[in-house]
Amino acid sequence: MTDIGMSKKNDLHGRFRRDICNEIFAVDKNIRFVGIVNREGEVVEGGFRKGIEPLLDQSEEQDMYLQSLSNIGFFQSFSEKFGPVDYLLIRQKKITMITIPYKADILCISISSLSDIDRIRDETIKIVTN
Image 1 (tube, rainbow, N blue to C red):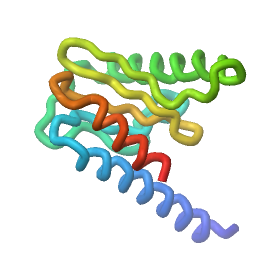
Image 2: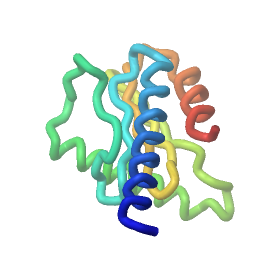
Image 3: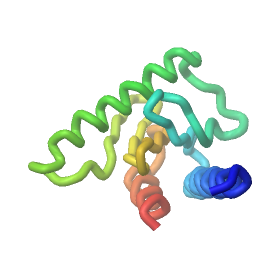
Image 4: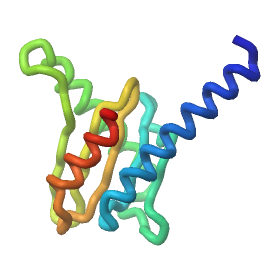
């Protein structure tokens, strides 16, 4: 494939990931963060909702993403016995984090814990699996 062909393919892939992030943000106004995180713990698409201040500094955020990757990998190692990992959910007083395997990456979502987490999780999974 030519450089132009690869560029168009990467551009379409990026647009598709952006669309997914935007669709998830549209599910609920209490979603603080939606991001696709690669294996290095870098957010390759998405970010915080406009007007939302992160609760962690950049280094702490990256550590959290790396831990999320590690957690997904750990539980995926039991897939033969338990079945594939659909998602991991961590609920704390201020926020709830949902981590969903997404191709070779993970999808991380941070939500106010006062939200309807089950509805947001279910709608997000529908978006990601369609």
